[in-house]
Image (cartoon, rainbow, N blue to C red):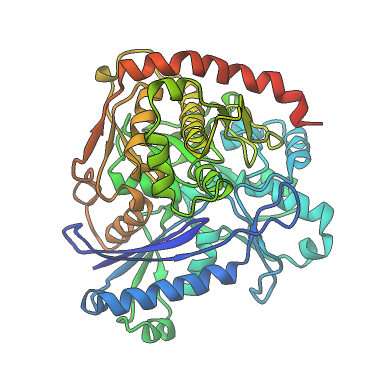
Length: 491
């Protein structure tokens, strides 16, 4: 039995997989985000541990026999977050998260200080990455920076509690701006530019390797056998790729999670920083991936549901699906930049916009506008990846993952907007946790070709020509909004 732990932004998810990759049980616990100032986004790492303990207790209660058979644990986690520790491993301040936009000035300074940074890291310096956050701490919270002795990513702080060691994997480390992504090792020049050195960093392993074993007291407390392996694991998107079986050239997925992602696997390192694309190491050896990222996807839909007083997001999605084509064509346009944006704009100052509101518009129109705006944002990302302008049937289907994937209407909207066939399996919303469990099985000696097979075929969503005819003029108007409003975002 293999335990997958996925530390997300809005919650933590646990899955149990047996050796045949059958999902045996799941558990989850909610998390909240703190925003004490504009552009800030933080969480207390101790809240992650409390959520993990709650989810473990529930899993032990609901599946006691399966739980007792756990052989290895895998980790997936929200990327880029900065957890800073002192010499006694005490957390010095709340973790600064991936969707935090405070370090814009530090990004400019970092690239000026290390002109070859894009070549080394394969990425633009963006405020969400880890390195600019430490530069911000050095300037604005020097008392914290001076006391810092280790910097860990969110899932790797959980690992410290599990195994008592500082370890990260290649895929998650790719999002720090401290990794030489081509060589898969820490970059000394990038660390020195932030006032750090190798001693501040965890050791690096591949996601499918063992990072150590569960601490004996914790194993006893959780009712597990000693010597439980904890795999290197992965950043959440690389873990989702493992979960859906995207390990070969050209395979990929679209994620409607808290953020929105288009992900494609490659066997060579192919950076494209000028397009605000991410080029990261994959969670398994000798593989990389390209990724476009928008910072608000399902989180924007949750925001809109709360804004309109709808407590049930499934009902909110049904409202959007109830609109006629005429009503869709007259709905407002939505720029989904509630937390700024990465691909293609790389602008932390960008904000969300509802354009074209009229008195007759209601909750259903806003729900549709948000779904459509996120779909258009994903289309921008796919275009930045240079996808060929051919029919959907000429390209492989992309897996559809993330909580937003539960909505048929949204899945169909994304398929039509991207002109790609999307395949959604039953377990798509928990793909990252499944990937973590699969990495645990690999660390326990499993074979990649057996463990990382595609998920069972689920529902297919094919692009609709009728729908695309409706979307085309609205996408043209959507594309005109950002350049028209860009100067106001910086005001």
